[in-house]
Length: 571
Image 1 (cartoon, helix red, strand yellow):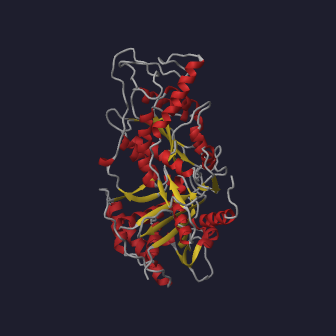
Image 2 (cartoon, rainbow, N blue to C red):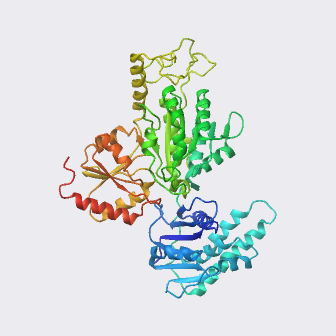
Image 3 (cartoon, helix red, strand yellow):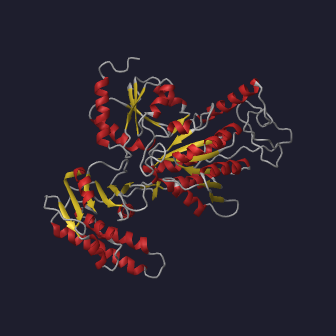
C-alpha cells in the first residue's frame, strides 16, 4: 500500500548542508505537486554546532513538521546518537561513512557522502547524494528530481550545464547505493496537484510580500536573528521612486526613522526580535501618544536577553501588548502559518492606518525559517486600507475628537505638532487633568475600531475549548482532531487577532468552562491575558526552543481533561 506522508530529517554539524538538503527536497516535491513543510533548528554561531532540519512531504496540506521520522540522514556520529530514538520502528537511517561506521542494527546503512559527491566533479553535491538515496527508498520518480535540478540551476551562466549534470549524477549515485543496501520503505503515493496555483515560500518572505501588497513605501531595520531576511527582502524589493529601505545603525534609530517616515505620510514598517523590541520601547510610547501609524514585526525567539537567538518561542506576547511604560496597550496580530504571515502583514497595515497608531505583528523563528507551499495570494481580492488624510482648511484640531480624526500632513492644511508630552487638541503640551482624561480615553477608545477580526471555530456547543495562538496552531489542530477521534468533546477556536480579540469570539469564550491554550513559553502569557478578560483559561506550556510535537501535545491535553473531569474549574 502506498504511503501518503513521509518525514525525512537531516542532522549533523552546521555548514554540512542540512538546510540546503531539506529545502532542496521540499522544492523538488513541491514542483511535483506534493504538499511540503520544512523545519530547521541550528545554534547561533556562524558555522558548526549541532544542526538539524526536516522535510515533511504529503499528498494533502501539511499543518506541522511531524513527529516520528521515516528517514534519518546522519552527517556525523553525534547526529546518529541524538536522533536515532525518533526514527519509526520501520524507518531507515542513512549515515555518513566518511565520518563514522556502525555495526549492523537492521535499520541503518552507510553512504560515503563526500566521496560520492567528489566523484561527480562537484564536491558540494553531498546533499544531492542523500536526496537521491531518499528518493530510492520511497520510489520517488527521478524525473521529479531532474526537473527540480534543471530549473534550479538554469541561470543563464557559464557552467550551468555542468552543475546540472553533476547534481543529477550525484542523485543517481545515491539511488544506486540505497538500492544495493537492500533497504526500502513503502512507496510514496502519487501527488494530487491542487486546482489552484501554489508557491513555495518561507515565513519571512511571506511577511515581506504582504508588506509590499499592503503598499509599504518606507522601511528601516537593523539586522537581528531571526528577522534579518525581512530587512534583506525590503532592500532588494523596495526600490524606485518614492520607495525607501535602509539599514540603520541600531533598533533605536530604526524605530525613530519609521516614526518620522509615517509622520510625513508614508506606510512604514520595521522588523526585529525581542531584544530589539525592548530597545524600541520609549519610541513606541511616543508613537502611541502622538497617534502615528506603522507596523513592527517581532519575529520571536527564545529569551530573555540574548537567550536562544536561533530557537523558537512564543514569549513576547506580554511585551508586544505593553511595550511602552504607562497606560498603553497596542494592537497585536500573530501569524500562525506561513500563509498567514502574508495576510497578517496586510491586516497589520490596515489596522495601523485605521486606528492611527503602531501595531505589533508577531511571528516566530519556526515560521520565519519554514518553507511551505501555499496558494498564491490573489492580490485583486485583497482589502488594503489607506490613511485618512486631512484635506480641509487651516485651524484643524488634530486631537479634538474622542476617537478618530483625519491626519494632516506636515506642510499641508491643518499641520500639527505631534507632541510626546500630554497635549491639547492642537498638539501643544498641557498638564491639565481634564486634557489627560480626554486623551487617554481617546487613545484607548480607538481600539474598538479593531474588534472585527476574523476567527475560526468548531463544535462551539462544547463546554471545553482548545485555543492555540501563533505557530502552535498547526500541531494543536492535528492534536485536536486526534482528540475528537478519541471521543473527546471539545470546541476549537483560533484567531490571528489577539488584541483586541474579535468581539464575537470573546463573547463565546466567556461561556466556556475551560479554555486550554497551548503556547511556547514558561508563564502561560496568552492564557493570563484571557483570564484578565474573564475567560477561564489555562495554558499547556513548552519552553524547549522547539515546537510542540503532536503526540506529546495530544497526551498532555488528554491528561488535563482526565484530571479536569472530576470537578474541573469550579470557579
